[in-house]
Length: 169
Picture 1: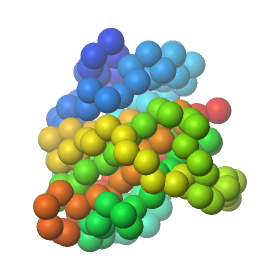
Picture 2: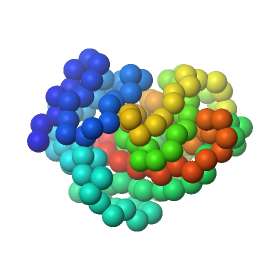
Picture 3: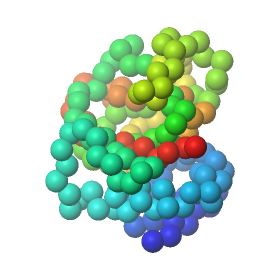
Picture 4: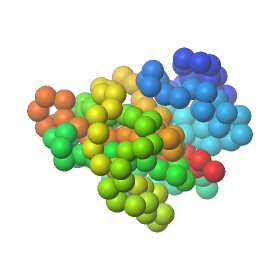
């Protein structure tokens, strides 16, 4: 299976569409270096409907794993911006909807310093681009994509989410 990536879209067997917020230039560059990682990730995503998923982490290869979680969305003030250095996030909602805020402004003050074991740093809240996540699309967040997931749309509600982690380095 080969992915086809251009400036505005990704062609793959996965039925959901890529969100317009994705940095396609960075994606193309990373895919050219590590096509096997992306093909593993998208093969898994294309098979989600036929899989029994348990909450937690599951390795797909040495450089790709996923986490499946079910949670109730948060009030905006209870969610935090985050970013990752070692892994790229592919975030996909199987069920439910939430807002994700996105900024590429790296001058945001750090709330909690980088935790290498969890590959995460948290930032102080600041308004970014508000993106609606539903089962119709997915998001890809690179290390420069500071994102705040899990925000309620109108009312707090249940979300079932897959986050595929693709090794960046």
